[in-house]
Length: 253
Image (tube, rainbow, N blue to C red; front, side, top):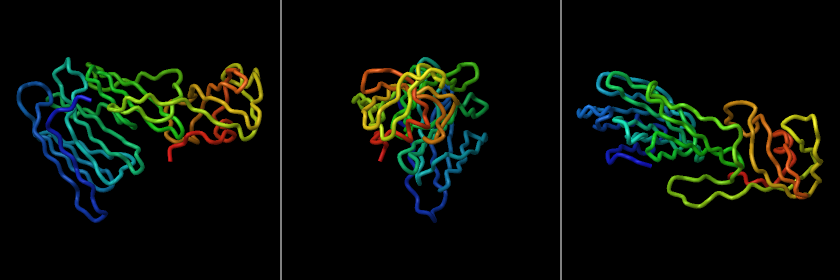
């Protein structure tokens, strides 16, 4: 991740502490004049961010007792630096709000969950825990709107663990054991059954295709898992059935 040298961290608070404050000076819009940035955040994640006399308010989700602000460079080819407001969340569930200052307005570019990877080429990747696998999404800076556009794939590759920016280890495959038999299908519907997975058989889960756009809770995930059976067949399992009938999946502990 490309990060400017100037950054401010807000230390963890006790339940009775006063709001935390941070102050930094940085040229955010490339006009050669540094902006004065003020950031306040209380123990509920409610924050106030100001550049000069312009102010915005918001709330970081899954607040875990500490928050940070830093200036980052999403795209080294443009003149802007962005503000990243970050919390690690209560149980390693990070969340970020990204802002851009265009010289007149503080623009909320995106509200993101998961660990961020910022290569500095106008693309942002997020890696978010989804129970027993990691969802990787891609966002692209829109130069006209000054916001991040979501590039949502049709399906997600199934991998356990989180690939953080400084972690070169490749996450492993997702495997589990069928605790109660259930069918897999030829397509992402229940029209053509392919096989019934036998109790006690081992499977590999290869991909997830959501039928709803955004999901944050494992048991609210609606969609289909692409499964390879112990006999080598490749078929689709409904999310509800797979979660209920496969044990020893690599859930985060």
